[in-house]
Image (cartoon, rainbow, N blue to C red; front, top):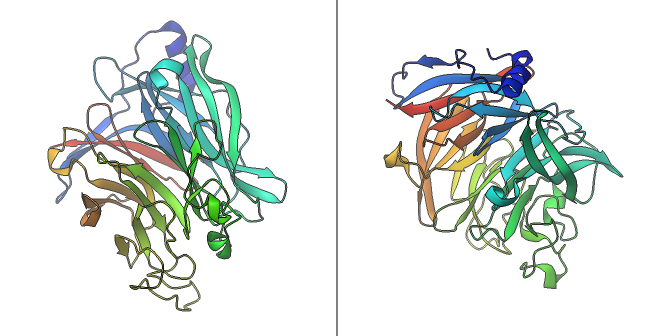
Length: 379
C-alpha cells in the first residue's frame, strides 16, 4: 500500500518514487480487461484526472493528489493530501463528494468540488471552487469560495447527490441536488432538492433555464429526481444521469430541459416498506427512464467512454455498482440506451473515470475502511 508519510519527501525532493505498490492481476474469467491496483484510500468518493496527475476525494473530507509518472501514463508514483478544503459533515451519506476540473483548467487551474455541510435549518450539499496549486509546499487549493448551496437545508444524513458536469461549450455547470430522503421536495418548484440544476460558472442561475418563468426556482433544469449520483454529457451533447431508485427502480435518464422525471409519484420500484409506487407509463406526464434495474445495482458514479483502449465501448456509459459490487456498461445509441455488460468486481464501486491513456479507472467505496483505485486495461 502507498503510505502518505513518504509523499511530502517525494514532492519536495522531486525524486521519482517507484510505484512498487501497483499490483497487476490477470483478467478474471469473463472480464475483457486486466485489473491493476494502483493505490489505497480511506473510503474514496470521486476522482478527476488533471495534467499534473489526479485528484481523489474521500468521505471524511480529505482530498488527495496523485502524482503520475511522466514516463508511464496512469502509473501512480506518490499521493499527498491537498490543503485548503472546507470543513465537511460526513455523517451518514455525507462526504467530500465530486471533483471536476474547470473547462479552461489549463489557463486558470480552477477545480470545482462538492460536499455535505452544516448550515441554517440542518444540512445540505454545497458547491465550491478553488485554484489548484502544486509547489514545494505541497498541493493545495487557494481562494476557495462557496458558489452555491442546496435550498433548503434540512435534517438528515442522506441523498445529498452533489455531482457536477460542464456543458460541452464550457459555459454552464450542471449540479445535482438529491431530495434528502424527504420525497416531496422533488416536486416542489421552490426547492432545489430532487433537481438537476443549470448554473453559470460562478454558481448563479443560468439565463434561459426553462422553468423560471413558471415560478420555479431559477436554477432548475429538470425535476422529479431522487438521489442523482452520476451526470455526464456524451459526444453528441446529450446529458445523461443515473440515480438510485427505492426498492428497485434504479434509473438511467436522458435529461431534457423542463421535464418532470416523476419521483416520488412514479417509479419502477417500490417503497422499502413494500408499498407500491405507480410505474412510469405513457401519458402520466412523467419522463420515463431509458434503462432501469430491479433488482437494483445501486449506481455510484457515471462516465461516458471516449478513449481508444477499448474501441468497442466508445460512446458507452459506465456506472459503478455499490450494493451490486459491479461495473456496469450501458449501450448508448443517440438518445436511446440499453443494458450492456455487468462485471462483478468483488467490492462496492463508488466511481468510474477515464484515465489519460484510455484506461478505465474504478474507485472502490471502501465503506468504513480502505478502498482501492484499480486501473482496467485491455487484455
